[in-house]
Image (cartoon, rainbow, N blue to C red):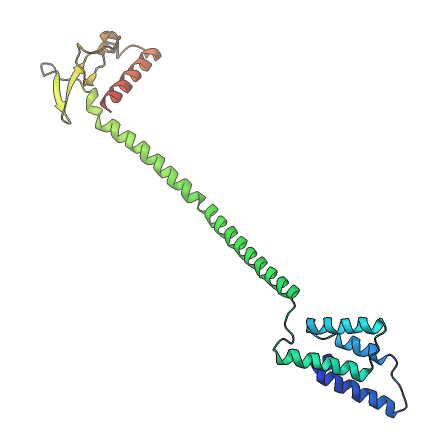
Length: 227
């Protein structure tokens, strides 16, 4: 079957020539019909093979086929499928396998693409961290800028100068208790800290942690008031 490119007509001619050659030499081929069945089942057309298999089953169950009759049936089936353009067409099972293979290839391709994207996304992690760090630095810089902007609030008024002034379209008062320029006046201040605790006379005294904490709280309240 392979030597005639799976052509049933040529296959039949080859079988007849070989059989006639054997007869001419006084020889006989045993089980010729079974050999023909075997040759036909090597064809690439699944529908044709199924047809031949059915005929073989009939033969095994008692249906009497001689070689010429079997080859004519096979030729008729081959010719019909050839004319209809069906010879060599894949079976439904083969089509399903092909479709599944195609789907599997698509899934593999999609998974490969996803892994590549995830890898690239992971590679940007350092960039994302960099952005986060830059943002943190920006926020820290903003806090520093805020401190510099309101540095004047800690500068006391010179002796004999007004205790009230306008800055950024807001009126500020020098608060003795806070030792800072605040929105509230001395009379309105509710801070319960002795003015002497923050006077210049304490500058030369050893640092008191409690006083430092109190002063920090004072400045925090002043900044909070401004915000």
